[in-house]
Image 1 (cartoon, rainbow, N blue to C red):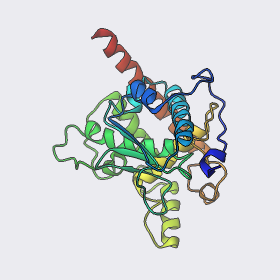
Image 2 (image 1 turned 90 degrees about the vertical axis):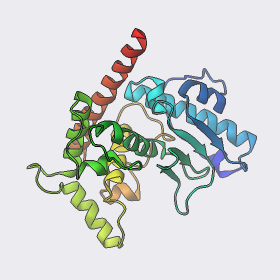
Image 3 (image 1 turned 45 degrees about the vertical axis):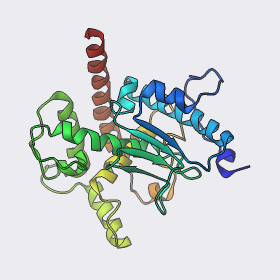
Image 4 (image 1 turned 30 degrees about the horizontal axis):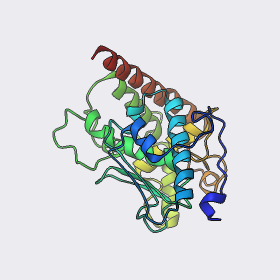
Length: 266
């Protein structure tokens, strides 16, 4: 039996499928990803298990964020890949050029929330800075925010702005936050720049926030509490996570309400 079929992912969410199997076509119908690709070396049994895992995880994230399905696919602009291509030493990744979220077969479980936030961070940049005429096509809002504060004034953008301030700036709003400084020190020790990249800090903070909620799904997110990365202090502390949760959960709740109201009136 393959490693992928042997691994067990804990979850305690609702039984959306009533014990039945779903397909990637069912996922496509619900979320309207612009593309879903499954690697050619994935067996039919592995594909079936993957479809069930993705479906439950995406439904759980939909429930945790209290958003309609179109938010999960970023209004149909996101692609979902499983066991396709891949990057060396990477269990999962998001590719801005193709707007594709990809998970490896044997090591991608638990990374879905992290990579989804990368996709959201990329998608929202052009919307958050809509008044800025030269937003690079592959820019992430978290990174762009550090050098451009002329974002479009809107209650939702204000919530993201406050979250970025909490993550990246000190209490005076003038210097680097203790958490970002710690991530920079880890990178300096390792001789590379990765953990301190703004988009990586934001994605780790988001997944840490999600895993701290009562509804659990270890295919969606795991390792933010007990892992080498967690032990190195590369996730925000409990106080920061709680404050970020209030901001991000409020953001997605109000986004969901606005989209639902717009759909009802059309």
